[in-house]
Amino acid sequence: MRSLHIKDYMAAHQMEAEIKAGILKALLDATKDVCTNVNVRCTADGMHMQSIDSCHIAICTLVLRETAFSKYECAEPTSLGLSFESLALTLKGCTADEEVRISWDRDSSDRLTISRGDSREFELKLLDLDCCEKMDIPEQTYEASLTLPSAELLRICRDIGTMGDTVAICVDTQKVRFSVEGDVGKGAAILSAGEHVTIEAPSGETAPLHYPVKYIVGFAKAAPLSHTVVLKMGADTPLNVSYLVEGTAEKGHLSFYLAPRICD
Image (cartoon, rainbow, N blue to C red; front, side, top):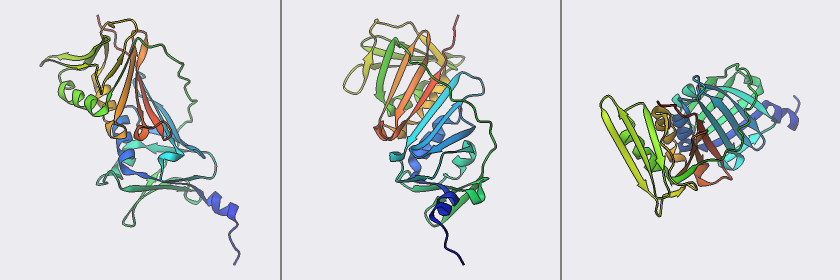
């Protein structure tokens, strides 16, 4: 019998991470309309993912830094092809504070192990996905920026999101108006600048900007990830919806970019 060399051990146990179930569930719930099967890049400093939806109108970028995990080890960079829908199935019944352990070994390189405590263990088949080059998203100049409680955006989506398939957003220096109109009627939600809502519109009032409402409803489901959300928009730029993981850039971020709709 020989002793296992430390390098052999690290090679066999390629990646291991522990994270709160609430973070994972919020990420999966918010990204399911954009991300279906994706490559998650694991490196020494955390996990990274970028995906574009099948209609090519929305991009999702996720960065989970090492500090977002209660435990994180990655021996060398690797990409894991995951079905987010299948991953979500393993988290049903989890409480937000429950720790989820994710591990991948070279000895079982076609599977990802998901463990919840000592009583639940799942194996997910990894997917053989083409490795797409990372899309460079250039710096944008936005006409308006809005920071508000993430729970408020979620509430707005629940209140008016079922009235139609397009939401119009109009911003001035004092307020922002979300409005939806469809066959059943129309609805609007107005937020005024104040203690919990910050509005920046250097050029004054923007013309109404139109977006597919189902995507924004989906993005808003990331509310458990952070207390606040930032929306940036302009006539000639995609809508940018961003959350900091647990409210701090040190743990990472989830960002969406959504192309506007051209309305006659």
